[in-house]
Length: 493
Image 1 (cartoon, rainbow, N blue to C red):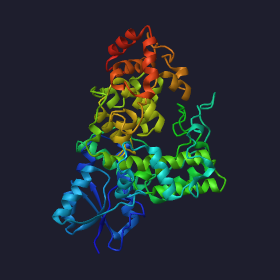
Image 2: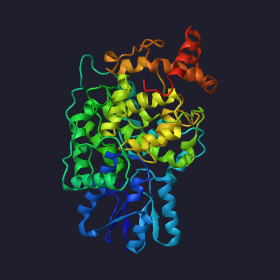
Image 3: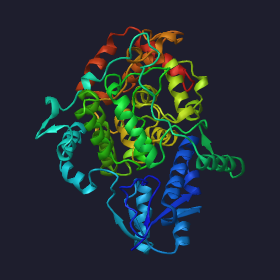
Image 4: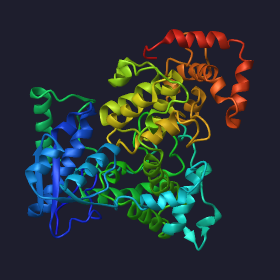
C-alpha cells in the first residue's frame, strides 16, 4: 500500500488515511507566497500540527521550503486526493507524470464528483444555483418527502430576511463554541512571531485568540453547539447586521468545513435531524442546508467548470487598484460606520458573515470599480475561510457581476437605505443614508447612483436593473453626485 498525502484542507476522517499512513507537509514557501491574514496562517498550521499529533506514528510530518522538496525527502510515491486549486492540481499532475504521485483520486470533501456535476450542467446556458440546490436536495434526500420538499416549498428565503430586532445591541443568541488554545497553538504563535521577525514573513491583520475549530473533536463540538442552541435563531436574521454582535446566530463552521474536518453531508444531515427532533424551525434549517450543500458545493463546482481564467473576467471594466487603507485593513481611518466596523472585523478576526462581505465590502468595491481579480485575491488572503476555489464565484460572479451574468441575474449593489434597514450602523454614523450630496451624504447612497450612471451602457438590457437605471434620470443632482464621487477618489470615506 502507498502512503496518502493529505493537504491542509483534507484533515477529516472521511479523507481515508489507510493502513499505510499519511504524509502531511508544512511548506514555508506556500505560507509566504501571499500576504495572508495572520490568523489564517495560525489556523492552517494549528490544524496540520494537531492532525499530525492525532495520527501519531501513522503520519509523516515534513517541514520543507516547497512541496517538491518534501516529496524528494520522503523518497517514495504517494497517493493524493484531488486538490482544491488549479495551481495545486497542476503540481500534482506533473508529479503524477514523474512517478512521485501514484494516483489522484476523487475528493471525498464534497458530495458530488466533478464528472457528476458536468453531467448535470450538460448544455445548460446558465448554471443557476437554485436548480443545482434542488438537484442536491433530491439526490441526497435532504428535507424531502419522496419527490416533494418538506413543507411544500423548496426555499424559505423570504422568511429569512428580517432586519435586526429594534433597540437591541445583540441578537441574544446563545454563545457559539469557543476552542481552547493549547501547546500546539503556542508553538504556532511563536513560530509565526519568529518568521515575521527574522525571516521576512509578511502578514496582515491582527493576531488574536483562536476562534475557530481546527480539530475533528472541536469541529464536532462546534457543530453540535450550533445545531442544538443556535440554529433555531439563525434563519430569520441571517441577512441582518449588528455592530455589537459579529457572530449573531451564524454557525462559524466555514473554517472547519474548508479544512476538511467536517463533511458537508454530515453537517446538513445533523441540521435536518434537528428539525425532525423539533429543535429548529424549518425555515432556519432549510436556509442552512441551502448554504452547505447548495451554495457551498455550487461554488466549488463552478470554480472548475468556468476554468482558471474566470477570476480575470471583468465585464464591468473595473480597473481601480485597491487603495492602501482597504488593502491593509486600516479600519480606524474610515468614518463610515458600516465600512469601518466590517473592515475592523476582517482586521481583528479575519471573518465577517456573508452579508457584510456582500453588501458592505463587495458593494463598496463594486461602486468604486475595484479590479475584480485584485479583490478576489484580497478576499482569499484576508479571510480565514478564503481559498482559491471559494472566492472567484463569490467575488467575480456574485459580488462584482464581473462575469457578465454567468452566475447572478443582477449586480448586488445598493444605497445606504438597505444598510440602514438591515443593520444598526446608520444611527450613529456621521453620514446620512438619505442624502447623496454634501458633507454628510452617505458614500454608499451616492456611490450607488454613480455606479449606475457609470455602468448604464453595460447594464442596458438587464430587466432587473431597468427600473433603477430609469430612476437615475429623475435625479436633478445626478451630475453633482457623479462629480462628488469622482472627487472622493481613493480616500477612505
